Length: 197
Image (cartoon, rainbow, N blue to C red; front, side, top):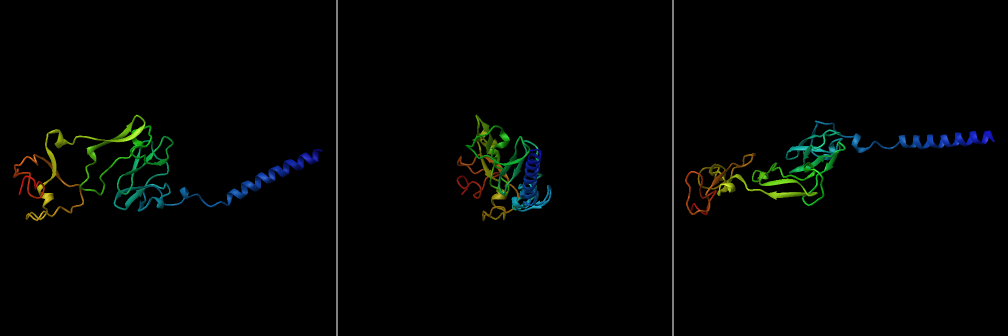
């Protein structure tokens, strides 16, 4: 009887050992492959963290595997990831999706979009859902209209109205555009055709 119990225990341990050994031959998980934090990347799949924090167009740096709660990382055009309370990266939540914290919600950045004005919206978690609320911009608060500067609206400065191709946010000004009077200092036919013919 003692021998059969001993043989059962040995058999049981042998089976556990074989299962453990079989698990050792599994392929390496994707999270342990790829570039480490801070290395240049052009796609999320290149990074061990699976998060390429894009700085410009398709150029970015790999985010660390463990992140700090509340951090966010940019995608190709806007915020694409947030760091949860478990210190792991998660896909950003879109407007209308459930949330608990502001940092979980989508936020437009205007990266690589000179004509975008991300400050016109407030992005946050409101009553358990991600929202984007339209805000008055500085010009609207003064009863004016935000328009492209004369220089950016006509980069050739010859009345051809060729917009600036500079890789930066366009320069805008607050002007009384639309009041029927062409303000010579701020307006031209290129940035306010309704006032300047």
